[in-house]
Length: 455
Image (cartoon, rainbow, N blue to C red; front, side):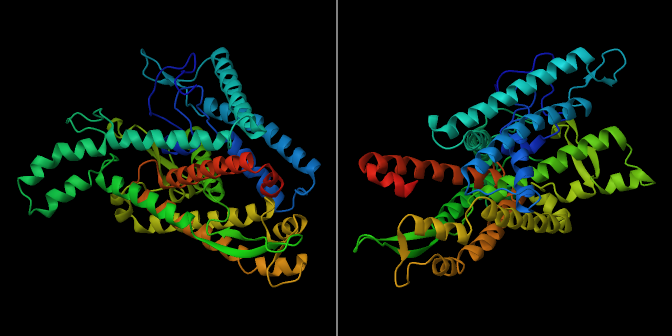
């Protein structure tokens, strides 16, 4: 579907793209059937998780009926979010066509708009069903994770060895190709720091060696931090001598906070564009337009060489849109600091919320250990005792892990990492999850009796 264009929509490339750089996270492709990607699914999950975490809706995740109802509600809301975002794309002018006679962008006719909406809705439902098919054990992992990893890997490979020339000066897109292309010029004056810096950092939004090195560094850091854990010694109450360890990872909630934070910021950017185009195109600072200039903000159009994107220039959207270049960070360090602070706070909030909502809190985990016949060595077999011990670790690793993952994601974006910092974090976590799933499947094949213990 990522290679099938929407029927009735002319090819526009990245111009006037409501998602723009955020597409790598949402596993979407401009002008194709996966225009919306996994955005509606993640947004629906975000809304329900916030409602559940704030106790606006009561869900008992230990009750199978409540879990089934919550899952069904998430899928229904995903369909409605697909419909809403499709309408927002159409009404916001994402599919406007420039007239050859007047030169003015005009919206599609009612019939064309309806047909475009039907295509987006059907494609969105197919994505939801593909995700559910994997969740129902017809495959490994989840469809959302698979879509994200594929999109990020494609972006990294293309930014590294892309053979096309995005500009007219014969500078190739791929960082490695551009590096070797410029190397003879630098070797002619090897003592010039300016020449070496021009090879490492190209600017203009083009992938360069600084981004390539950052990408490798982030991969290594995340792989190392994924291996950090606190191991609580446990034993099986029914059989003496059976001992093991219950691991509490440093990234206790994995990549969930980054997904939700990216979805939140993506929707601020997306909705802000629609409001700006429709109600405040002049970015006025009087009356109601003054508040629209602050929330969600104002936008400026990039040049055609830069992609023709609408980029936030003021207001809330300006401080929730990642500065993906070192020159932008140095040009406005206040914006970079505010963005990182907001992003880290969002990651911590969603990490804490997910622990409560996803049944990963100390109370639920202690009950699971006791119900499976386990106990912590040196302590009596009691749920309250196990909970007190887990309370020493789980809240701490949840907050510290959320802060760390937010800082790494934002910092990688500042240095121009390929696939974005958030995308790299998600991909490393997803690949590790698939590795663990395959190991678990292999163990249960060899030792069928471990299925009840592993879940």
